[in-house]
View 1: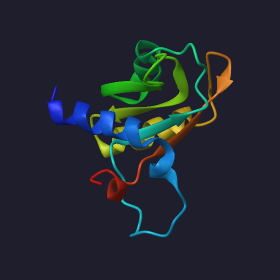
View 2: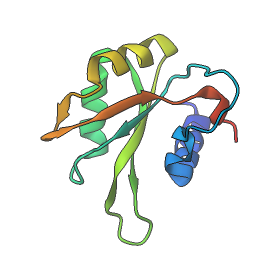
View 3: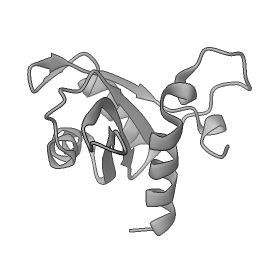
Length: 115
C-alpha cells in the first residue's frame, strides 16, 4: 500500500469534521476517500473494512480515536481503490445499519484533501 494514503487518512482524522463544513469552496471534486459518521463506539477498523469491501477494494479504513484514551470519536474514513468504487460505497452504505447504528456515508471533497 502507498504510505502516502496512510499519511492522508491520519491527516483527515486530525482535521476531523472540518472537511465537511458547508463553507463555499471550489466546485466539489469527487475523491476515493469516504467519511463515515455515526459509527458505534465499538466498531473496529476491521469491521469498517469488511462493510465497505462490498463496494470494491478498500485501501485503508480508519476510525478516529481520542488521543489520550484511544476511545472512538464515532466517525472514520475509508479510502477505496477508485472514485467509482467510492461512489458505489456511498450509494450502497449511506443510512445502512452497522453495529446497530445508521451510518452516514459521504464522499470527501478532493479540494479539501490537500490542505
